[in-house]
Amino acid sequence: MKLSYSQKSPIAAFFEQQGFVLLDGGLATELEKRGHSLHNNLWSASLLINNPQEIRNVHLSYLDAGADCITTATYQASIPGFVEAGISKKKAKSLMLKEVEISFEAREQYLDNIKNKNQSRIRPLIAVSIGPFGAYLADG
Image (tube, rainbow, N blue to C red; front, side, top):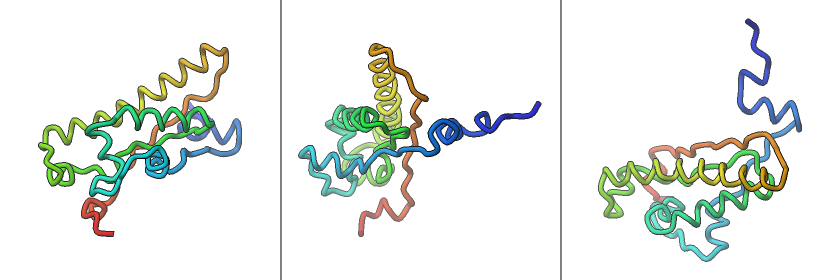
């Protein structure tokens, strides 16, 4: 059985239909624009602790603006980074998984919203953002 181009990669459908994949904007920049201080070692991931809904709201705003792919708020997230912020290892793992869930929930909410408006589109992608170990050091 020969696979078509679109069966090989989830990105392929976007290139076939529109010739490009539109990524979301800067998550941290948008969070700061909305009044959140990210001047800590966890950056955007700090909102997973006490304001995860705001991350979901930003994901939704990017999807509403036409993003084909949203990126999780986990670039700076690491178990050592959360532990240094006073979070247990177990809770740190839970927070990182929660952000993946938040992204999926935002995408499903967006798809439900456009379905209710009798609109459709290719299912947006979710990219898990994984920073290098050195990012956890947060030393610039």
